Image 1: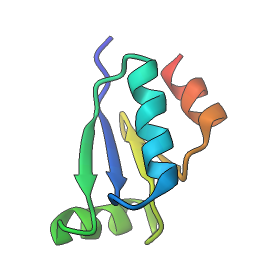
Image 2: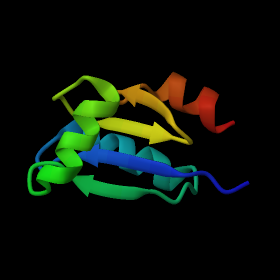
Image 3: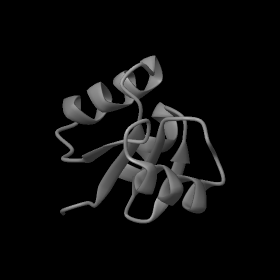
Image 4: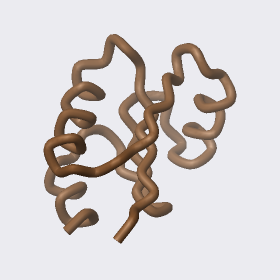
Length: 77
């Protein structure tokens, strides 16, 4: 099953790196959007999540705020 996964992140965020490493370990393809450089992506992230903090992870339309491993495993499994 192909999932649509987007990670809204910044290059300096340690939790963003952990989230992306976790997705790679799970073999999940994802789009990584750098909200520090991409204003449009940042605006989309805030509109979808109400959050300025990163990471914000979208899996098939479901928003996960921060690197919540348990929630991601629940959605992905």
